[in-house]
Image (tube, rainbow, N blue to C red; front, side, top):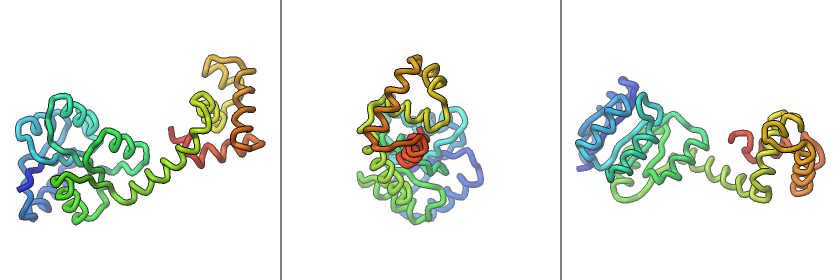
Length: 208
């Protein structure tokens, strides 16, 4: 029997999920919670096999709960079940070595599959999110031709800042900003500010 804890601050969603999971013969819900502090206490007490956590919760968010679990030596596996379908949040979850990342609009059958896969030592990521992360990683690899400072200058250029504003923000001279701009254009083989903006959008720099 797979022992599961559910944590979500939306009562109707949490209770609905509880009823659905109770219909599975190999899964038992050993507790539920509506905020981060309650969730952490519940997990520490019950030590379930899997904790299904929302990311946005009062008190402690899902990431904070997971970090405290790891620092306290709690080996419960975590599946994030969330509305956050943006690439950066998903990437943060995956880099934290969580066992699963699912969107709330996935089918219930997907959640059952995820629970069983994670319990068996596997991982599960919603297909739509995994596609986004793959595309994002490809874009990030393109940015590696720029130095960190050049990427920052490019992001600020694409955000609409003037050379003077960029210089003030980064505590460098306008001449240095001009040099960075020239180097960026040469490396990317582009010739106008509009080209720089299009590149920044394409590679996700404006999302950072």
